[in-house]
Length: 87
Image (cartoon, rainbow, N blue to C red; front, side, top):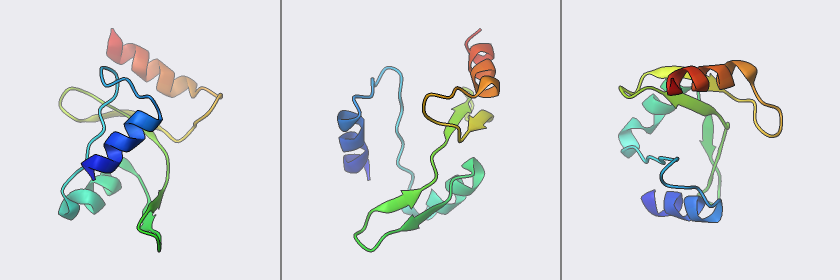
């Protein structure tokens, strides 16, 4: 929900000028997750378990690149796509 996303953004100190968190309509969640390659499942306590991915979109919402590589190891192909998009 938008409230949960606001809590996540606050907890993780996400800069709103750099991050956009979106909450699709419930009927669209499965379709959007499929397009972005995100797998998820509801947990008994109401939370969700999901894959983590960074997805780079262009201004039209088209996927330019994605990666599931997180942490201190930088995905060189994803980084190159980000740099190209910023040119």
